[in-house]
Length: 110
Image (spheres, rainbow, N blue to C red):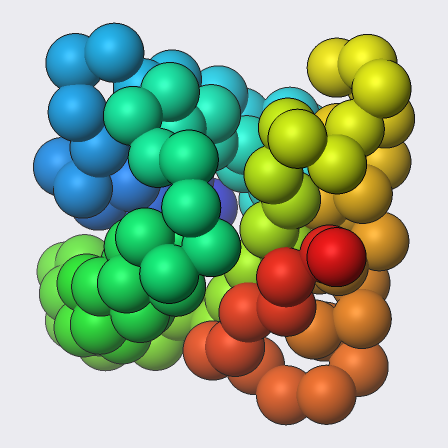
């Protein structure tokens, strides 16, 4: 029950930081993908990632519990991918690298 609430809250927070033409989807487990159609430059991605981290650092209060999120972001630009699958693979590689470094961090796949 608590896990469902955590996933819903994370989805709400991700959706609150995206625009109408962007797309947020849960891939499975605790992994989400965000497709940002309005961002085309690395510096824009960095600003987005930093804002997303700030938004998601706030704990979730559920009944008597304070739940702190731990997350890592993998970022890839479509310019560097030959297909949608390649783009997802690049973002995945970056995410797993970010997980090994520290939580609340992002890595850009270049």
